[in-house]
Each structure stands twice: as C-alpha cells, then as structure tokens.
Image (cartoon, one colour):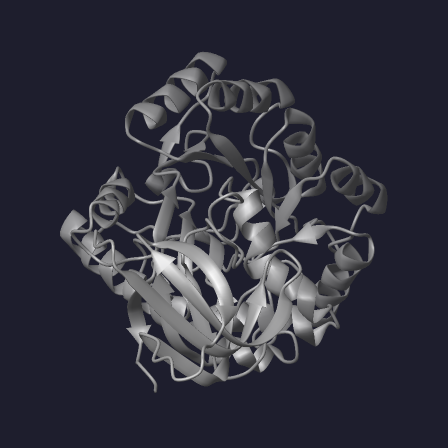
Length: 393
C-alpha cells in the first residue's frame, strides 16, 4: 500500500464517539488509517473535497446474507458460481449505500470467508466482512440449507470447531424457528426454542474458547431468554413472537439491558411498507418503540438477502427508527459506533478518530438532522480508498 497521504475535506465532519460537528475540516489518511483531523488551510487543495457535505463514519450492517439474491427462494439450491456472482453484486451495492462493514450471518460453505480473504488481500473491492459461514441448527431446523445440523452436545462442539477450522469470524445459532424458509412454514418451531439451555451454553462456551463471538436468531420469548442466559453476544430479531400477539416481556428486556447486550431487531424495508410477519405493522412498531424506551441498545442490521431486502435499501431500516421517534444520534450510533462494538470491531471502525480505519461516507445531508441523509451517499471510502461515488471539487 502507498505511504502517500490522502486528504479528504468536508464542510462538516462528525468526530469521535460523540459525533462532534466541526466545520471545514480535513482528514489526513496514511496507509488506510485516520491521522490528523484539522481545519482546511488557506489555498490547500485536498485529494478529495466535499465542501457542501457531511462526513460520517462508514455504515455497518450487522446482519446480512451475502450469497442471496433476495428472491422468494431464499436458501434454495443454486451453484457456487451463482452464489459467488451474487456475493460480488451485493458487495458493490452495499458500498454504494455507504455500508463499509458487514457481518454475514449465514451462507453456504466457505464462500463468504473466501471472498473476505480476497477483499483483505486487495484482489477485489468490497466492504470489510465478518462471517459466520454456515449456521448451527437442529436437523431440519431453521436455516438447515445453509447450516450444520446438530442434535447432541458432541455434535455442537464439533460444529463450532469445524467452523473455526473453516475460518469463521463468529458463530450463528438458530435458537428458534423462523419465517423465511424456501418451501414450507416452520409451524410451532416459531414459538419454542430449538435447543436446550445446556446445548446453547455448549455452543457459546466453545465459541468463546476460540475467541469468536456468538449471534443467536431468536423469535420467541423462551429462545430470547435462553440466548441471554447462555451468554450469547448479540440477540437477533427479538420479536417476542407468540399467539395471538407478539408481546414484549418488559422484565426480560430489562435483564438484557442490565447485561449490556446488543440487539439486532433487523429493521428493514418491510417495516414501513408490507409490515413484518410476526405482528401487525402498528403493533410491531409499538413494540420496537417500547424496546427503545426500556433503554435497549439496538443496532443496524437489515437481514439483507431475505425476500425483497436488498443492500441498496439499507437506509430504509434506519428510517424505521426515525419513524417511531428515536433520537437521531442514537440512530447514527446504531449504524456505526454501537454496531462496531457489537461485532468486536469497536477499536477499529465506527467513528472518525485518529488511528481508526478510514471508512468514511460523504453525505449531502447531515444524519444528525435528518435520516434522509442516509439515502444520499455522495462518496464512500474504505480504508481511505474511494470505492463508490465520485470526486467533487
């Protein structure tokens, strides 16, 4: 990599973990890292200049499925070549949306890990990738098409070790059934856990031995509680799916808050349009607002790859938060700072700070003023390299 200094100027820069707004700033970048952050000098001609824009940390999507084409046949058999073409297309769409880091939570084999390695070697352009590779589920359970099927504690230990061997960055547990399944409804598995608490602990303990964090897919209350009690690192969905109504267990949520756990409610383009499958739209939005009011730290993750949820719609998930009255700074933290911390990259990305990776997005609007800003990435930088958008003088 070149040792020359790249300079990026913006009319406004959101600096540090509090997103302090400073005007007319220049960021110096050396070997992909942020150096000095200073005022523009008189007569200076930066490498890139966006005088009418706001510079934000690059966005993070903590729950994606890079292999999927977002069709109704999610998880259906296709060739590895089909999947790889889709992975490359999705990476480009994410970058154009300002998403510079993704956590892939379920894909076939080692395709995403192999792609991650190619990106890290500089062979292809893409966002920073963390991947679980295959998910862990029961035989015939949710996600079995892209999973390792396990029915005993011995199976679970072996599965975690195999995923470590195959280069996984994290482990994904299917703690309950789910709504996206090619060909059939998952019946009562939506309303009960798939694993016992002891089995969940085996997975988490084994993963943590190898330094991998654990994400748990949880639809119903009991699966959510098991995920918390087993020590998983992030809880995905947290829908409190139940008959006849999805009802938030306030005391359980307070326990999650007290434990300092991050939750990925997978807000996406569904919420404000067709609604979500586990509740009527108004109820789902009211429950989401309740989670916010209870002090839960919710982070951005769209579940991109499920039907109709494509990478270019990333901003619509953040718009859901705005629609229910969530604070603008909370939303930006959800997409950057907190998301980075949740996936164990909090000392590398998620804020504009000296020594951090230069993952940056120039926006035509200020995200601390309007969520419309997320729909208008003007230029996107990954490790200080322009990967989407255009140069402006």
